[in-house]
Length: 83
Image 1: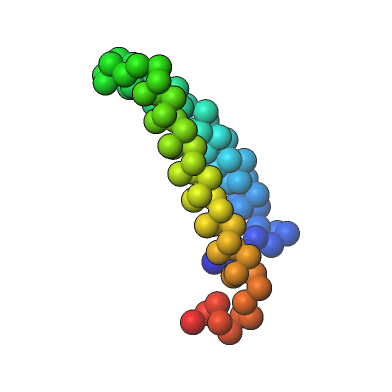
Image 2: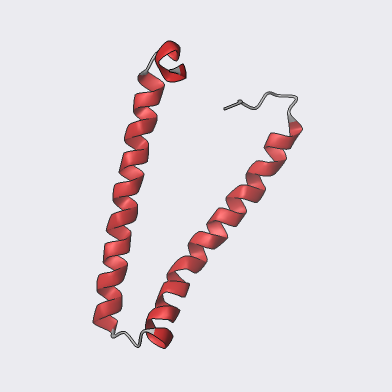
């Protein structure tokens, strides 16, 4: 993976666009989950609560795994990362 340099304008212009897209998707996903649960699956409030708690726990576990791998990659010498 290539790192952005001071003269690399494209990387700096893409970052806000990517962040905005991911943030908007993250805002809309819970609304879509509830809409599908209510209108398509005819789920109760309790069912929606359980489903959203399960999704939240799943995202929390996934983020913990990403953080652990990032720390492992940063701590590893460059020769081990290339392998």
